Image (cartoon, rainbow, N blue to C red; front, side):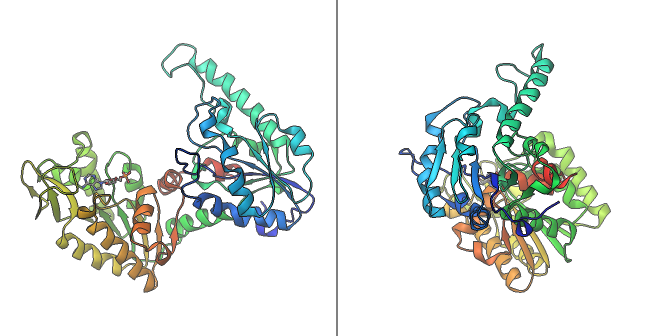
Amino acid sequence: MVRIQDFNFGGLKAIVRVDFNVPLNEQGQITDDTRIRGALPTLKKILADGGSLILMSHMGKPKGKVNPKLSLAQIANTVAAALDRKVKFAPDCAKAADAAAALQPGEVLLLENLRFYPEEEGKPVGIEKDDPGYADAKKRMKDSQAEFAHTLASYADVYVNDAFGTAHRRHASTAVIADYFDADHKMLGYLMEKEVTAIDNVLRNAQRPFTAIIGGSKVSSKLAVIKNLLDKVDNLIIGGGMGFTFIKAQGGHIGDSLHEDDLMPEALAVLEAAKEKGVRLQLSVETVAGREFSNDTERQTVDIFNIPDGWEGMDAGEKSLAIWKEIILGSKTILWNGPVGVFEFENFAHGTGEIARYVAEATRGGAYSLVGGGDSVAAVNKFGLADQVSYVSTGGGAMLEAIEGKTLPGVAAILGE
Ligand code: AMP
């Protein structure tokens, strides 16, 4: 295994999987270039060594078809400005052999959206899982995915994966391609290394007490995460919409709050498991309820077990926050994923803002804090606290799967299982 900082790219062509899936407005202009900036340390290192760059990424969900609205040509100028050099564009990522061969040291070639080819994701096209012939179609697709990955690999001497956001996918460019490079010619980029190290720090080397704060809308999307965390943490705070399933399962009256009836047995099992494992599982005790799901709706603070009919819990109440604050400030390691209220509504954002402040305060006091998952990242940004936590993860789905305890295919393809 090689590490990027120890590798000299001089005179070599590097094909780098980046995550340039940036948001665009109607005019095709980039509205947030965070992902492009995130890849710069890796790209600049390769160029500074005297290597040449072949950049590949997906954008959006073109589902295996060419879609000009999702063309990476739209971002070539921004990439050029960020790297401060010209960027050539290959309008067909699977037919870029000549352009790649012509690259000189220090030159950059950006390939068109990988997902214009169904082989990138490797899902059979035009056939559903239950259809007869699906198994054959899947096998054929696997072969053509390998061929597609081989074509991409043939452009370069070295493969670098710096796209953490897609590391949980076994796609041609994120994992399969690695089969065509020997162990000394494939590596994680700087961003990937940072992400993997941050998650490892928390899951394997956590200083105690270790507290996880899990919020968001649904238990179903984070059940596996919660179960895996029960074996790791000292304290587990469950807030936000998903908390109400736990309250209802214990006989609470939750009014019209969000919940998933079918997951109540699982919720009870989690409460039981927490007790057995000696984990302090702290649900909300008080909620700010609204009459309807809107910012300007009438509000009242109520006991979480007694929410009146016609009202729904939409933010954490002060009593919940006081208990959570004490837990968070007493922690040495903190993992936060998911808001504890409908933070998109100004009138229900207080609880999530407070959590962000407690995590920042604990970090100032020496705790290690990792914040990840789309909405919690949006929350720390909204409250201007992103630079006051130890690490903000860029990959929502990938981070969640890593916390579930899964080895990410994009990481395994390079480091081994
Ligand atoms: P997730 O994608 O599962 O992390 O959930 C994030 C979403 O959960 C955000 O859009 C929040 O508005 C929403 N959310 C958090 N708390 C509540 C709540 N009490 N009721 C409804 N939605 C909530």
